[in-house]
Length: 315
Image (cartoon, rainbow, N blue to C red; front, side):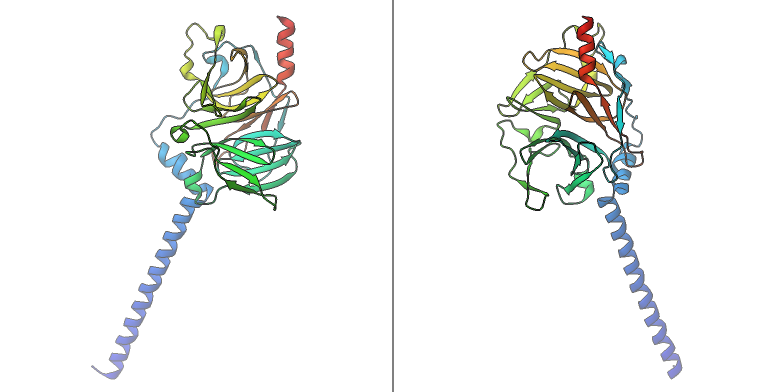
């Protein structure tokens, strides 16, 4: 072979090796990009959890409470709707404390807002790690004197305390006598007797300090053909001797006496994927969950005290 032919062969081989190496790098970059998109972006998580995993499944239908198993005391309409600030997506929990509003999200974030919802005072990612592995695991929150308590599909009841920088630092989980690893909590509220939580698939409350179930009495509110298995609690608030429980599927706010555990009022509210509620200044504030590709719903505000007073005056 001539010298010029050998040179051409060397050049060709080098060019092929160069292309192979760049193809490998490009392929690796594409794989890394796709892996990151699936693991750590809202779009990727939406595709995995809300699209691919639900193919062939029937979409859950949210119905008015009047179609559910309980007799309705009254139908409430919002007295106000409040847009959430930009950046708060898929809210999972809400509590009013010390003239601030604490909102958690499905991404295990915490936002602290002014009581008018207009000013974001702080935002914190409560747990690090790929978004796919923590999406939807935080379902409810309670706030106690600089301490944040979370519940959900966590295998424990985590606790965070405020740090010197205004953020939140995770510390040892709450010590409870009940084996919580097998439970999925949907809401939590502070009462004078301690923390009380709602549990997925249960129509009882759980007193966390004593691990004692609180059996609720629905009494004469159950329709003749009513099946309570159609009810599910998605949030809880406590105020002045009453539990306020938010139901999903048949969207309503149920008011139980805390001492009697007896149902007192059933209020139909606007059908939605209601995630949690908070009591503040005579009103109930409801945050609504949504998928990545859906518009962010406003917070719905209901004048619950006025509704109860009106019903009491009629009886």
